[in-house]
Length: 333
Image (cartoon, rainbow, N blue to C red):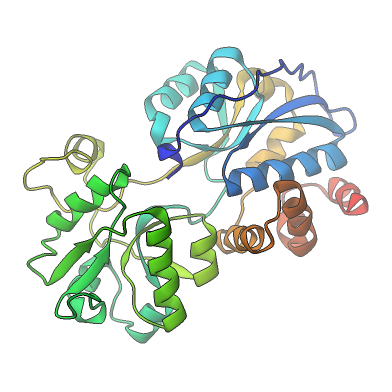
């Protein structure tokens, strides 16, 4: 979903003189603080660890996917983008990496992320034969529509979202109408969220589109169902699945959502142990989900949530740094 987030203008970026870095003398670092919950959390965790553990002075720069990437690519600042969603700027990212202006120091900083089709965990526990989307669509009776219980309800994207056409195409590709399904437009983000919450709170089955990492997926322990067919390729996805009016769309899995931690070429050359930390920094999906639930329930800002993470998940983050750095971070909490 991050490739769907519009890139609003953000504050003018100050050039960060990185300098040769060691753990005891890091210097000035500029870092993107992406304007969604997981991006905010990750940036503030990085800030605390870099400042307290490595002696850096970190400036966070708030922005969306496109403007942050453009500034790094064209101006060389900020030094670090921790949660850069790639699909929306794929061609530009590939070009920048190939030409060496930017470096992907971590190609998977969050496990289990992406878009796709989801069901509650209890649905799979109660129906262990449902291994893939191919299995689920054979059982519309498990997901009766509230308006017509004789058909199964598949909840797609609200009108106007970029994912709406993808769900329409896949609904067609899997012959879901013929198999006894109706495609439901939830009307809005609130409607989509509300349908998931209502089903889970009642213990009812639910089948539809969503994405992770999000607080809702974490709160209700939703499970992404593999499609059971291979990805048909970028050409099919870009010229058919995402396009209105494509006749006879083929069956395919959802395009892989990719998130990189990227740094500028200058920082890659001079960042030293900071790059090692960024390469090792991988958030388990359930941990990120739990933290997003915490942020939502407590209305916590990124800086407060970062402290909560460092206290709650010491067993996770201490694997990302040396014992000496870990000791400094723990002493600062």
